Length: 263
Image (cartoon, rainbow, N blue to C red; front, side, top):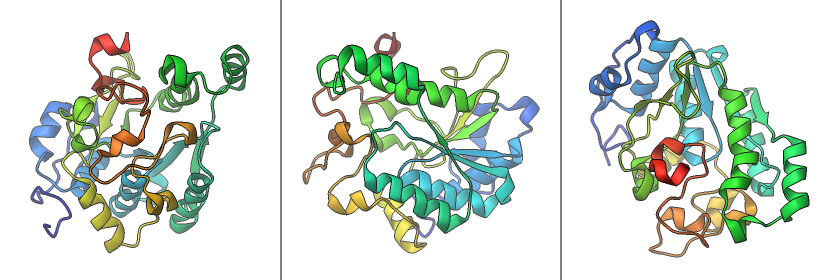
């Protein structure tokens, strides 16, 4: 394993003015940089970093972001769907206390959840798919949180889901949550990392992690939709296992899906 905890070489970050941010130019300038330097370049471009936090990759990004930007310029948020594991809530608190940061927890609209469960019950996703439930519990709160932001940072990796993330870039324009009037950009510093890289970093720098990882869970979402995986299974096989294996996204990263799958 390379000393930079990744399979790409270190390269100094290149500053890009936020008023003329070009994700393609950012990729060309920084694609071979370490995640830390990608975050540094993003901070220099935007003057702020908003990190979406839920799992092992994301807490690595929190750790790195706080090394390249002042704490008051790093905003961290998470989505509480109301159906997370107890261990995940405990993990949130460990991260909050470990880094002494404010963790912005976002919740779904109560009336929308009430309407869904009243009509279809608590486990409708087993019959008609997860997208409706995820749309209410995840996508809508995310859209509200991202409104007005110029940039957000995610822990996506290309190897997380070969069917949907194989073409992931370190910087993208997020047309799913942004608009022509209010463009939004997405920074994915861990694009080229593997799960092994992530866990090497976690162990090397004593980064907090979810206790469910010690019980066979790899990709962790809501309790009814997540299960441990067996040796040899891909990490995303523990998510929505009753559905087709080809398009495992909850809607937070809808740009990864073919247009037909999101319509």
